[in-house]
Length: 195
Image (cartoon, rainbow, N blue to C red; front, side, top):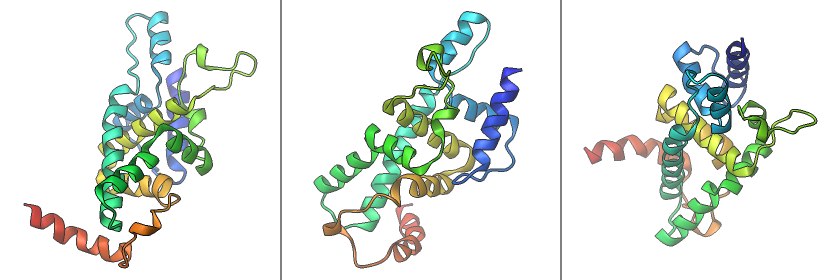
């Protein structure tokens, strides 16, 4: 069955770094399968079987886009003294599709092989996925949403930091003298002051 092979691939992918998730429930697999599914795959599945509903990553991407932007904004706010305009420039440089796509390729995640696409996004000779940078970024954002929903914000922060933020230098002119360790220790105190 096609779904069994997809689920096995998802389990293998999610067991590798940076995720290292060894036990995934059926519900977790449903969410992750959705995160990897392009609408071209969904549409072709529906064409084959009109009663078949294979949701695409679009709803998860919507959430993941916001979660990713929040985490990038949190980093630049906590770890720099940049003014608002420079903070915005930094955020845009990190969350741009091109930047996300480049980081995913540099990280060696192998995300392209995981994306479920229709025949129009496959090489006619090799059958390999042909993934554009926007699609790669969208799927990563959907995956970030899935991690957020399944594992929470702290785990999502770890993944985003490891894949996108640690390799991306903060602007030198805005770095604080204090290290990020001091900022992390201060974070619980700050959040408790908000409520």
